[in-house]
Image (tube, rainbow, N blue to C red; front, side):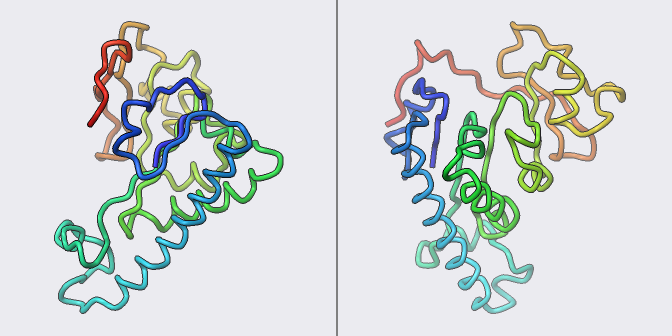
Length: 203
């Protein structure tokens, strides 16, 4: 479920393999996304019921394991929601509050049910990324930022002072950032940077 709210088609190469896809933030794009999140909310409820009915020896921790996800009959395969420039959802005058409530529930309860939500924004303040969502984000990734405030909004208060500085990256450090939450201590991680003009569509 991929949403490019900048609207430039950055996720275009992924469209052929997406269950849901939109580029843009026109009203029809927002309403499409809202309907999709309502469907994901229903899928979350279905999955929690499936997990509840499984014998304890198959699901000892009441969450999805790789073995359970591989059993197609259960329908517990991983689901990924990716939203770039997510503030366009949450600041929407008509639908922002419902989008926020649905997204927050997916962030809180989704991981145990195999639903992973990823939200990206250039400045994750409370308006762009509501605290109910950001406060439950276990993994945080910060590319180059210009100041310590933006740095700490992503990586937690005091990170910059403690030497976890995404301000140190240069414009040449494409796809390189600080990852927090994966290990005991944040670490510098390289992601896959794709030069869009040279990228080939995923088929």
